[in-house]
Image (tube, rainbow, N blue to C red; front, side, top):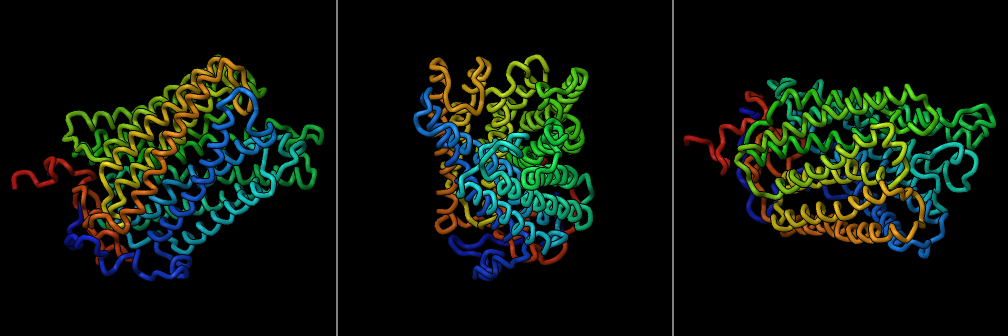
Length: 552
C-alpha cells in the first residue's frame, strides 16, 4: 500500500524537530486542552491512561504484597476487598478498554486511510473530557473510602449490603462508557467516509479492520452496561426493585446484562491488539500478511460471535443446563476466528525475511501469551471444568493472559513500532528488546503459577489462604516485581528519547503504509495533498531484507 500523490520528505537532522508538526504547533496548555487535532488527542489519552495504569499497578502491588504470606498480616479483609476492586475498576474501564483504540487508534486511523483528521474532531475532544470525568469520579470514590464490591458490582451486595462508595464508582464507569461509544462512532464514520482515493475496503490495513470491528462492539454493547450501572445506582439510591429479590427484582438479571457487555468488552481490549500484531508481523517478515481476507473477516467474526457467549460466565449462577450447553458450544466457536489469526500470523513469519528489531520481540511475546490465554479459555468453556474452577485463581490467570498479557504486550509493541512516527525520535533498540523480554518472563512468572494454584482450589478475592499455597503466591509476587520493571522501563527510555533520541526520519523501519510517507512527527492536517492509493496492503514483496527495492 503506497501513495503517488504524497511528496517525499527527507530525514530531519539529528535532534531537530520538523518546523511544522503537531508537537510544536503551539506549546501552551490551552492549545492542547482545546485541540481538535486527532494526534494531540491521542497524546492526551496516552498521558491519562498512563496515569491510570500507574494507579492500577499500585493497587496490584499491594495485593501481591498481601498474598506473599498465608495470613492477612498487611491489611484487613475489607481493605483488601477495596484494593482488588479499585484495581479492577481502574484497569478495566480506564486502561485496558481505551489503551489501544483511544491512543493508537486516534493517532493512526486518519493517517492510515489518508484523511486529514477524524470525521468529528470536536466530538473526539469531548470524548477525552468525558473519559477524564469518569476517571475522576472513580478515583474520588477511591479517595473517600473505596469500593468493596469487586469490579463487577454484583447485586444484591452492591445495591443493598455494601457500605462503600458504590454509586460514585458506578457513575464513573457509566460516564466513561459514553467516551467509548462516541469514539467508536467517530471511527466508524471516519473509516466509511474519509478513505483516500484508491483505498478500497480490501486495501485497508488490518489495523483498520480490527478497529472497525472494535468500534461496532463499542457502539452496540456499551449502552447495555451503561443502562445496567444506571439501574444499579437507582436501586441503591432510591430503593427501586430491579435486582433486589426482596423488592421483586432478580439478581441474576444483573449478571445477564453485565456480561452481555463485559464479554464483548474483552474483544474491545484484544481486537485492537490483534490489529497491531498484523502490522508488526508484516513488518518483521517483510511480506504481505498470509490470508489477508481471512484475517480481516475474522475480526468481524469475533465481534459478532462475541455477543452470544456471555452465559459462560454464569454456569454456576442458576441458568438452565441446556443454556449452559449452548453457551459452551458457542464459546468454543468464538475461538475459531482467533485461531485463524494466530495461524495466519505464524504462516506470515514462515520463510519471511525476519528482521531482528524490537517489534519482533513484542510479536513473539504476544503470540506466546495470547496462545496460553486462548487455550486455557477452552478449559473454562467446558461446563464441567468451569464448575470446578469458577471463581478460582485459574480464572484470574486466564483473563490476565488475554486482557493484560496479550493487550498490553500488543500496546507496548505498537507504541515501540510507531514511536518514531509519534515523536520523530528513535529509542535505544536494546532497551526495547530488554523491555519485551522482561515483560514476557515477568508475566509468565506472575500468572502461570495461578493456573496451578487455581486448579488446586485456591479461591480468588480472599486475602488469606492455606499454607500449602504459599510457594505459588511467592512466585507470583516475585514475578510481579520483574513485570513491573518491564512495564516501567519504556516510561523511562521513551521519555528520554524525546530529547536525546536520534532523529527518525519519515520511515525508519522501511515499512509500508500511508503513515510512513509523511514527515515524523506529522504536521497538523497530516498530508500536503490527498494521497492516491495504487497498491494492495503490505506490498513488501517488492523490497529486500534491507528495505531496498529488489533489482535496483
